[in-house]
Image (cartoon, rainbow, N blue to C red; front, side, top):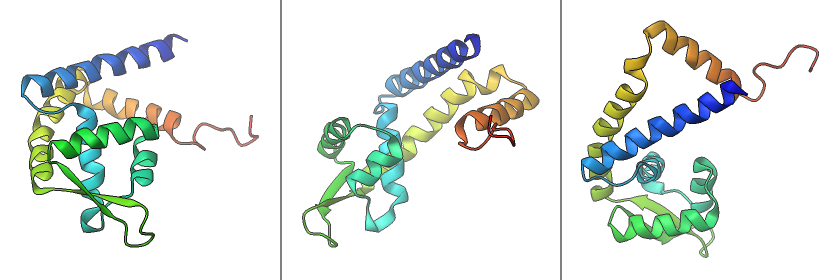
Length: 146
């Protein structure tokens, strides 16, 4: 139970520090970075909203509102999906690419301050291994399945 509570608290503290750093730099919130990164990775073909929803683990109604705000800011654009005509694809604009690139150094610096400065290289590697066991479905299962 203590491990769970500390993991949750560490995440809250780190995320708050990142959000504060982005806000102090007059940049959009962290979730915008995550959307822009996923859309940019899709390149010119774009990404369907349901694919973005799956990649980001957001509920459809939250993603829809979020995309509306990001589109109004001029960072993404929607286009008709060629494959089915009814759906949409989301593509990043040049302005969106620019703001995502400006966000990264602030984001990375906040990660370093929140996590990197508090752990030695060996501790960070150990944490990566432990968290990997928690985030990989088959990791940590014994050979007997128990």
